[in-house]
Image (cartoon, rainbow, N blue to C red):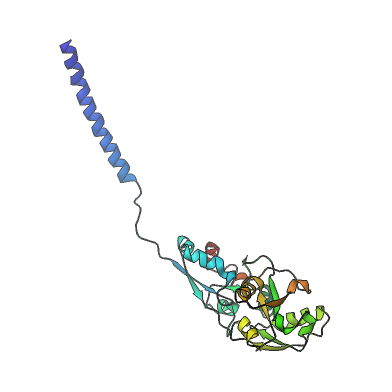
Length: 250
């Protein structure tokens, strides 16, 4: 019995040692063959976004994504190009000063008319939520009442034609005076520098309510203007070298 025990021990102990050694060896091999994960962060690609106006609710998604660092997760360093009344986002994109701009359907159509290479790649708002707006205290009840009034424009070439058509659609002549604003449209209304402005209901419309400023609005889609989506994002060219980074940003 003792001799049998000694025999088992003489076989089992060396076998156990071999198994342990082999196990350690295999574990080391697996570690050495495993891909080494680099702790070095890849450089971010800079992308410039030109705004169509001062930051408002139409830009909420952009600022939320920046706050959540979602652009960085896609390898993008997003830089905001502030709005300027002297140059449109589409011109900034066309001149290489921005990679993508917050634009409008009207602006892209105007660009096409003069051969400027601009396209729409994504809608920010899926419906046209813009309106002509006046102070309720002005007593203006209908778009036709805007004949002969002063319109506070943003400097886009298509504005007067669209506004005039809205007035005609309501029975007016479409004759207006137009001045380009260098201040917030609500401030221009409140200071009586202009009689009416073109606003986004989800931006200046909400702003006016918070400021306690009663407005009478005329949604443009109710007066012969198509319900196109606006605003939207517009890069220079659909197949430019920057198209891939634009898609990643979306």
